[in-house]
Amino acid sequence: MKPFRIALTKGRLEEDTVALFEKIGFDCTPLRQKGRKLILFLPDANLEVVLAKAADVITYVEHGVCDLGVVGKDTILEHGGSFFEVADLGFGKCRFALAVKKGTDFYSGYGEKTIATKYPNVAGKFFSDKGMDIRIIKIEGSVELAPLLALSDGIVDIVETGTTLKENGLEVVEEVTPISARLIVNTASMKMKQKELESLIEKIQQAKGE
Image (cartoon, rainbow, N blue to C red):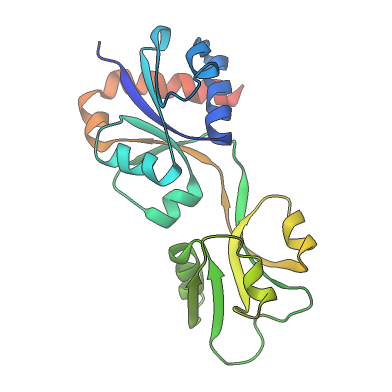
């Protein structure tokens, strides 16, 4: 059978996925000794692994060049796309949160508020659901700077421990949504290779639950 191709988000999610594969019993030596290679084959699992940036994982799965992908819910919420989200893998846990300068009352007053974020779609939906008028400024680097420089009233960003916020005089006002790694599947692959894919998904689900 032709190998399945899975795209993994490089970095921590990649490491956590490799650990999950090893729990299943797959020999991940090629991934452990990958050097600079971006495509690796796991013979005993009949899996071709593609290492990519988070947003590209979605692109590869959506366009069918990869059957499956492992990507954070943050990327799914921001980019959307046409694919099946089949499992919450339970690692890479963090949250989207609204944070402001310590001691600021974000929801007071009637003027339009400004939010700095790397995730304009997530932030836009969050405030739209609240019926609030918000001006969004997209920031590529450290969003914590925006309120400190008076560029924005607050930020919407990924928060793990909250240490970076505290060290920069910011605090979480409200949680937007929890985040974790998800397993996604190409829609055509799910139809054409359903039986084989379901078997692999089941193995992943079982290993995740151990």
